[in-house]
Length: 152
Ligand code: HEC
Image 1 (tube, rainbow, N blue to C red):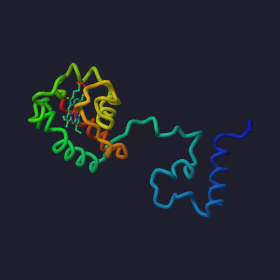
Image 2: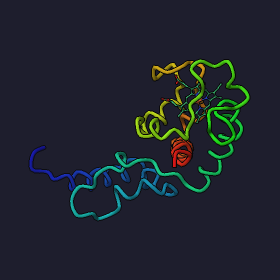
Image 3: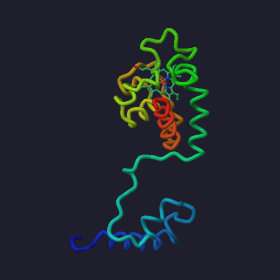
Image 4: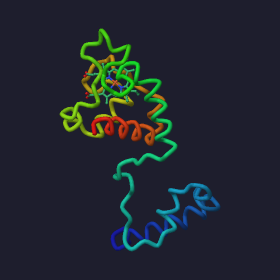
């Protein structure tokens, strides 16, 4: 395979694709897919996978709603860690206004604990997982952004 450039491979893949599947490898409605195949880019494009997930308006709205219903019982209406269900929890739910904590944790850590729960990341198992959000990275990102905004 040496001597065949990445671009040539992509073109070949695209040709194969339309030949085998008979029209486009599902590019019809997929907004993200065609960029890889159709765009005559200068040189190999780097996959957007490394870029942090950005939240959309819709995801932010959903995140706000989730925070208000699922998180405030423990973390408090304004994220102070003092919700009605927080009493008796040791350690207590995190106070998101704590700037020292904010700078001590990574975005990734926050997104992990939201999805997989405290036990999965070595924290209190009282912090629940949210399995339904594992398929919604945008909403998880928006929740993380919201948690971050409370530390400002
Ligand atoms: C049943 C109570 C409860 C609910 C509901 C809850 N949490 Fe927590 N959460 C906790 C507790 C307790 C901790 C402290 C864990 C520790 O320090 O070991 C925590 C910690 C955290 C942390 C900090 C983790 C760290 O490393 O310090 C984040 C971020 C967080 N929760 C986000 C959320 C979000 C977002 C929601 C809503 C989707 C939520 N939590 C719902 C109890 C809860």
